[in-house]
Length: 60
View 1 (cartoon, one colour):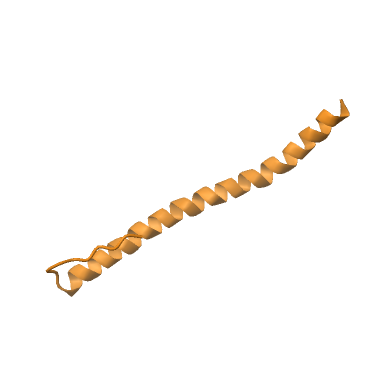
View 2: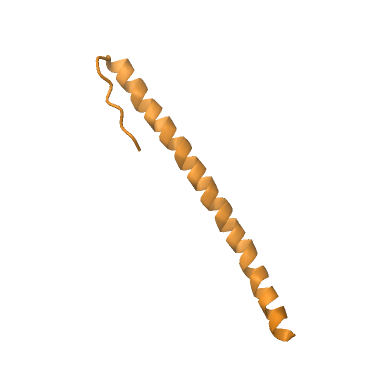
């Protein structure tokens, strides 16, 4: 998270900068969370398939 210290702004300008920081942080957090969720689903799907393929290779 980055912090911007507004100079020569009143309260509404300061609050606007703080809200902008919160929105930018939320967007980055959402992107990272979505990536991690997709990766978790991929592991849940791919792991049993890899076990089945490993068993098939050992049979030959």
